[in-house]
Image (cartoon, one colour):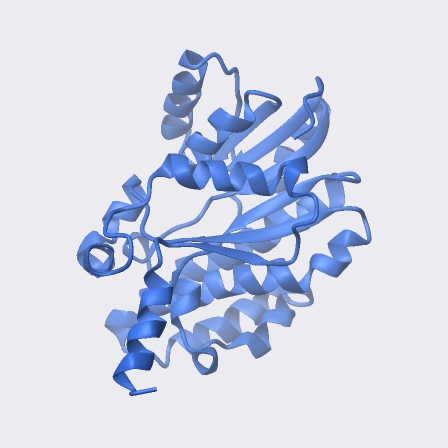
Length: 282
């Protein structure tokens, strides 16, 4: 990133493990705005950053509310030149039903990114947190034909994805909706790259594996713990490792990086594919 006074970065989900760790890195060179929908967690994160010598601007924000997101970006651009957004805000399957997975993970990503497109200037970058789960679903299980609806009719978009999720067994719907929502994050970050480039903006997604955060640990009993133990790198990823990658993606060092997804999962997906190939005798 350019070491310049007057530059601003936004981190959504800034009170979470990956968000707070990323804010600690970005805050070394930029004014950093941390956004979260829970004021109590946001205050604690701001205090922790202050102890590291960083003075963040905390803003309570629901990423599914376009007006709240616009206020977030208006505040950030009022502090200086917006150069980076790291969108980590999201929910995992244990945190809600299928509808909430889609609303927060898919619609929330759309809302934040479209605000970024409207507010940011030439040279700015955004990185969206997708998930390893988006790499697990076979292509035929992803209702990608409905994804372009997001830019034309949000209600129709959500309705179509909810209908797709309703075909899954009830006990699996939240997990399926999570994977679909994160698949949308990957799709959007690739599909909109050319449009964003027209305004001099970069857009990237990162797909973490099982990360040792409060939200990540919620999924340990739902299968993530077994995957960590059984695949290529037999440990949980660290929030700080993901933060370094996210911060790099929005830095000037990654100026040629756009329209792609980076899978950072400790080799889980690679192992799964190789084991499937070997089992098939190929």
